[in-house]
Length: 418
Image 1 (cartoon, rainbow, N blue to C red):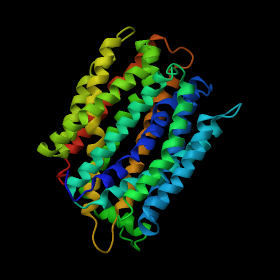
Image 2: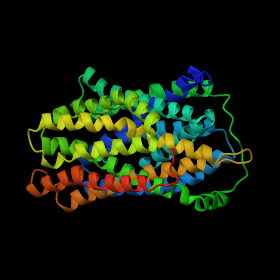
Image 3: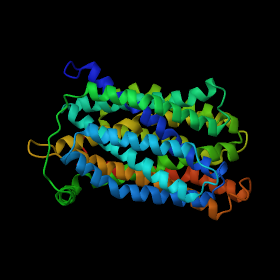
Image 4: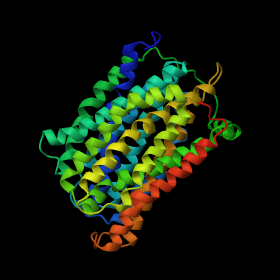
């Protein structure tokens, strides 16, 4: 480790990823299915609600990013976001009686807004803690390492407490973990990175948009590739429980399969870090996408009882997860630093746009996949031949097609030299 990046600063920054990862697991995987299967809201309606909530949230990101750059320290936004998340996540995991789609919409908007306040400021810190690109790579990989560690922990604990087969009890456990870890690690983050200097700027939101437009030739393909690849990742994440339950027919193994998937990502992180230093971040990201796409070629041919084959898919696709998580964010930090100078900086704006793309990708994945399943009558008969074909196609074929598009755009990004 470079002596100019103290271990305590690195850890205090990276450890804050733990509560965010624990929170992200139910938001991306459990909640959509929970409100469909347990609460009883129509699957297509859940897809529309989450899509609308995400779209509303998307339009707030540039404002939050600009305010974060211009007026307040990053920590103020992280604190505000933490309060919003604790409030809204409680009500999402403790739904009232006779809950409806409006309830889900309201608290989804709140939790996504809180998520924006935290993540835009938190990710912006990585570009301000150090201006050495090797340090930003280390910060990003360390952050994603603890992200995956937290996910693995969140998947293991339901087994430890013998509640892995009960999705609702698992959700409540996630709430307890977030409630306990978020305040403590937020305090550690503030203490450990308190000397980080943010350059204040009087640049307006309009000027920020002009900046993005004038420099779009440098990263528009990256934006598009990042979005498309995130959609490709979000679709199987959203449909994972439904696929394992209705196609593989191994509902009791959902937690185990997720654990294996993310554990593979943890073990692969050092490998992808070394590969990125040798071949570059751009090329390494492409390699990981190709690996995931190759493995997913086998998914459409899986059916009831193919547990071992799907387990192998989870291992190898999980192996590509490490690179797919930390390399794009490390590239983003490099780009943000490239546009930083003594008089102004656009770190928050750039990270807010990447946050927009992430949320839009998830909204697209949930909206498209759940609505298509609803149109083909998945709610009424999930075991029908039509439902099985549609679910398998959405889970296995569509992500491959999207990842091919992402790779093409990454390779054509002439200005993406990292």
